[in-house]
Image 1 (cartoon, rainbow, N blue to C red):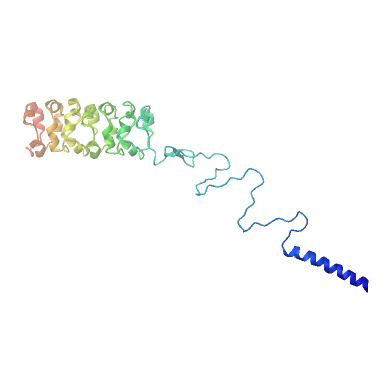
Image 2 (cartoon, rainbow, N blue to C red; image 1 turned 90 degrees about the vertical axis):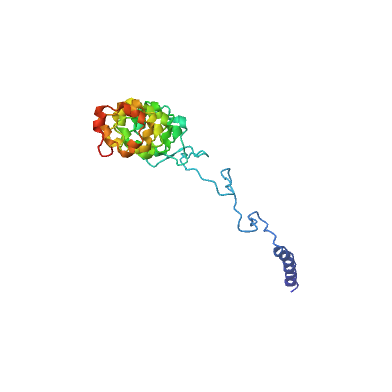
Length: 276
């Protein structure tokens, strides 16, 4: 009986020592215990150096795994590659006006007519005069009417005579008057008759007199009557006599009386009787 009582006393004493330690949250005696984080947000970083902290503003873009990614420049001056491998001009990109100085006729001829409307006057001014011969009528038709003011006489002289048929009145109206001296008779002959209404007196005054030989009656019919004041005697002297049939009453009213002296019998015979 005394032995049983002794064992009971030992058990009670042992229990009294162990219970407070467990109640206070002491870790177990071995090394397997891991202290949990205070909340659920903690993520244990990887054991190596591969971890990269993302930027706080969310602007980070992960490069593709093949290493082909190229960061575009900040000013937008780049070509965006298209899926087929060709290049499409970035809408914010504008060529340096001097960049076209080395382009030749063959290269200009290859431009899509739907894209040439993007050219500016500063760019046109830097085109090689010989190279502009590569443009055709479909391209000319799409030039920005304000931009054509950049062309000069040396460039006009090299326009393809057939291509000038693409110009309209709004484009003619913006040609530099000084540049008109570059046109030749074979080019003038292909002007769209309706487009000629865009020319003013200052522009006509600068035409090479020999170029007037290219006008025909259908073109003369569309001359702005007020522009007649720009003609001089040398120009009138080079008109094709048959073209005089295109003049009407309003044209006659604006002729410089001093120029009548250059009219010969053949030209007078071709005047339309009704306007007179």
